[in-house]
Length: 396
Image (cartoon, rainbow, N blue to C red; front, side):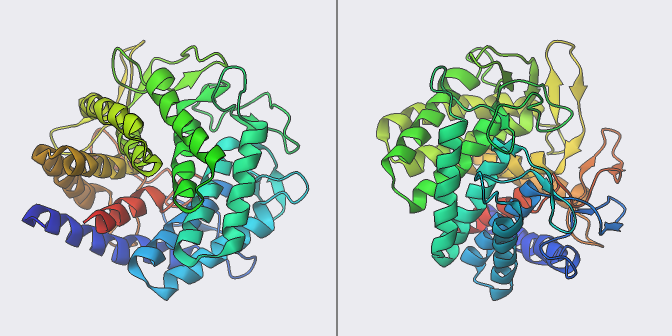
């Protein structure tokens, strides 16, 4: 192991075990109503009656299961088991199958829609729990959710996955994940976060139908989602795969570069890996347009209006570190290792809350910390930054 990799490993080990994981264990456990609290504001105000999101719960499950598998600390296993039990007891729809989007603080379903993005994260968490524990129930429910996605969301006519459904799997009018998204039938984001859990599920369940759909997902990125002119990812599509967006998301570009590579490695198909190896090189180059001289990566650019959003979001920086580490590892690119180290230095100096734990949501273009957005919540979870640390610890 070279000196720079050793430095990277040492730093992320400290961040994971002293900054990220303790925060959620010490602040988010809901001792009164079960599971985890739904929200802590950017000013560290705990909202005990906040709704609980499926994505937050599933991401806590993935993070602590992975942390237990890699670090072998029983305290992490206890948190992972708590997340698994709560997911299956309160978010899983026992009548129609699938995961509800939102429950109230007592665990009663309040948004019963079946967002495919959330089904994907539930598979991701459950499959990781099985990897860590060999718990058969976790694998059983991960397979059920895979089959639900394939039965209800897969578009047999035009390929790909439709975004969202009612509790009983009818297409829903408002398919958006969040208010900032376009209301389109297919999105890059959901496809990326089906690719990710299908990859993890295939590690532990070598099913032919899963293998076929994982390979198909990789090819959808190569053929439909990655813009052949710019090598950025197109973000929104109608059901026929016509692109409906002119926005580039640098964080998703760099995240997709390594998740695609991981999927091709796990698929273990030499032709697919050859194709992915070539395109990942181009995606990384495109993502680098968002890199700044301070080591950080900005959020996005609208090519239609020319507007550039230079906010430095926590998750974008975490994905940049992994993306550049992946590029260093599989392409022997020493400059990418330097970029990963530079981005980590930015994170440590600007985004990590060393006083209270965890990371702030973002840093504004002017350099001030964003304390308006959540510290923990429906979208603010320990997964991007926790995964950054775990990936580096496991790879080296």
